[in-house]
Image (tube, rainbow over all chains, first blue to last red; front, side):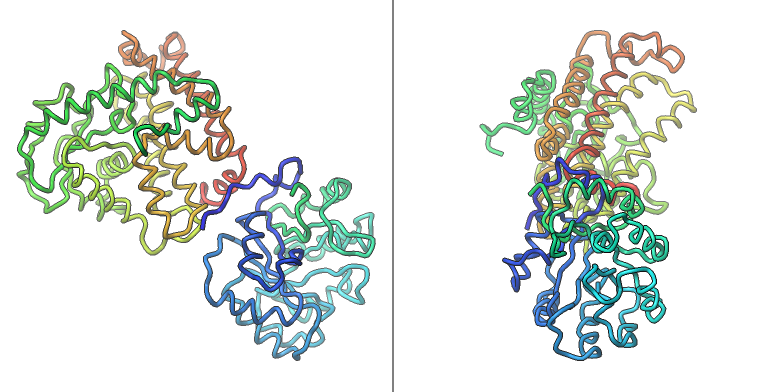
Length: 231
Length: 330
């Protein structure tokens, strides 16, 4: 397998950050085909990626795929754990997530889906909690996240800048999140949001608006939650 | 490469409208003189595990009128004192004695190159021999012995630690170490009062930089390949002259214009070295007289053009900047 030279970022400020990677969460047409999702992510960046198993039934196939130990180019690889269609209890779910620990740098979970934090402690520093968007009941603000981090003191922080914007377009919530959890920051989710709060490619307007906040995150991977604009 | 296939340097020339005539003439001169020397040296009695190997401008395919015959008798067999052909026998055939007797004045055993990497036994001489052999050498006799030995040195760097889509760090670190060693030794030689400051400075700015980046770029490019493909990729690239390796990297990364300027400057330097009196003038330049030497200042300008083009490749193109950032410093 050969990694092609990428030039997809021309015309955008994003290429000036390194590393940038794609989330497979937006690759709806490739769902259930992990090699194809990895290939598509690699076409965006060979340096970082996030493999998304947003529904619980995607988790076992992902474990099967990674247990074959495919040769992946990514230096930073995160896995987004299930946030919907949950079937098993929390201990069973965490047992499965533990099988992924050796293959990944981070396992991202939505704090609003965590009812009992105790089992998640076994994920140690691989566990990363993401701030939520305005639709969610918890995990949106510093105050709400602080209670989860108190229970999971080893967990890292995944900063979703668009989620923070959805709560406060003036970006003061985003600033506060970085003020409070910047020392835990592990990676950033980058996108804009539609009116329905679905991830869409980063707009020029948001690129300008987000730049001061993103400038505080220059040393961690940025994961694109929607296709890069230039593609 | 088939005889009719264009070299990367020629393809680059076509892309940017340059003929790189000095470099291509030097390649022709290298090939024709190599043929003559091969016939001469082949008449000497050879041990079955010995090969005569030319280094420096021969390995870079950049022989000019004043080039030295820097050679090594490489032995891919047991260490011993009596090797055929002897150094004296080879020197008796070649026009110009090696420039540095410490490096080239005795048989070189492949086992030393392969087994003594790092630690005290890997002294300056062993490091220099190994890197010249790996990065800029060409066989004069016993090509099969040469290729086996070359493959063994490369394989030593590509052990089980090599990972897919990562530049092989062991080789990368040693290549960078060699470049820095050349730079540090330049100052060391100056402190010892070694002659030919100007020529050594010119070579450091241009020829040595081409040698280094001709090794560095293929190694960084391994970030695009799986671990099984990496040895073949490196072997193929290291068989090319360094200027072809550089041209290929620029073409691969869609930066032909910058390379046209970089290798255009290098082409001018090769042309300068071929001019009567230039080499002698550079040899006479000292640190204190450098500012007054028209030739030296021209060489300095060419060195800057080459460096700017190489830096543009490493820091202004698609993915290479990220690879350099991830692997080039630590």
